[in-house]
Length: 195
Ligand SMILES: C[S@@+](CC[C@H](N)C(=O)[O-])C[C@H]1O[C@@H](n2cnc3c(N)ncnc32)[C@H](O)[C@@H]1O
Image (cartoon, rainbow, N blue to C red):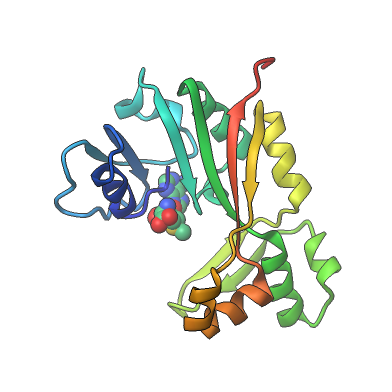
């Protein structure tokens, strides 16, 4: 869900994943996806109303750095949950909310806590195009965890990936960035039986 150009999905299929579907609103897909990769232009906010996915179920549903674009995150996660096969799971990654709070604190001359707990949406100019401004919803760790439980999911595993020592030595700017902004969170989510 929010698969970008579908390149990562193609890589997963080349490494043995079975028939896969990728959804992205951009529709800017790789031109020759390998057999077994279907790329669909659509909104991940309502996976249940995408005609191409109607009636289908999946072993894994991935939201890699895309969940933040869901209009109603609980609805999206519930709809994805309903598309899971028996024993299926959702893999979801999200940027550490502390990173955004720290960036805003630096920009606004405020404190980490003020920005971390701020409720209002915020708008910023992207680094890659000065004419484009993006608006983001703020979120805290508890907001994120509460979305999972409200949608009927439990966290089987959570990971905060770090650079391996060798990579950190080779890419010192990445190490410095990770040391400051912490990186992303990875969650493996499973449906709660009681929902
Ligand atoms: C940060 S990129 C991540 C892409 C890919 N998952 C990856 O890991 O390389 C976020 C993607 O979400 C897509 N996106 C944003 N809003 C969306 C929406 N409402 N429905 C579907 N895709 C969306 C964007 O087009 C973009 O490709």
